[in-house]
Length: 270
Image 1 (cartoon, rainbow, N blue to C red):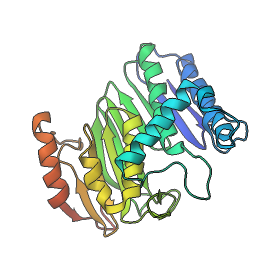
Image 2: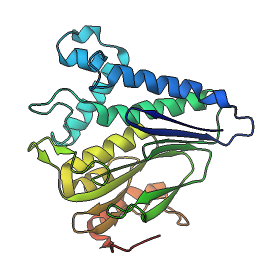
Image 3: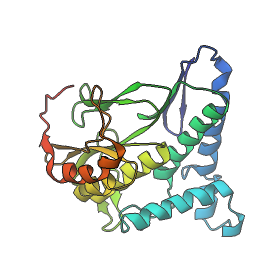
Image 4: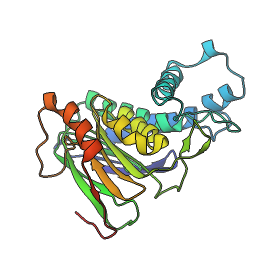
């Protein structure tokens, strides 16, 4: 079963490879994502987020889902020393950097709860997969027709933050200026909630975000810095490569991130 809808400003595609998959299996997924768009979009005047931003809702009147999202936003603000912020000076409340991954992960959980075993849910290039292996290509940050690398993921999520789709749109909340230091940063994690928010938060941190993301439990990282050097943690599930044992991963990741970088040529392909 394959289906694509345009929600939250980007295409969301669902592929279910189970033998008994039916077209209606995607209905709860897309209904949930449309509900999220209506309730959490800062671009809709009647959304819960917009009403909170205008002071029309008391904290006690917030939905459990919005409280969960705001708690996640605060977690990443604290973890990055303020580089990641959803309320910047002169701007309204915008939790989209957390909402997207959180909402799509919940949609994937709906699929799993309903018995789907092998699927790929792709939301604007950030994906949740189950029942793989699935191959996920990481786009070259300067060449739309090229890949930097290909990952092989069985169950988990992959998210990338970069400049190539929306330009310098990520702000370093510590300075109020556009984040520099990275061209793109990809995170592989067990959930898209973690992968997407970590990728965005790390990008806001700039060059120091690579080591910060690599140090987060359960996260593997592939990054291209502003000097076009490639950084990767050794546990990154590259296609055809065997990841190290979990007990060895975190210590070796720190060494790899600090020392293991190579030049990304403009014509590099995988």
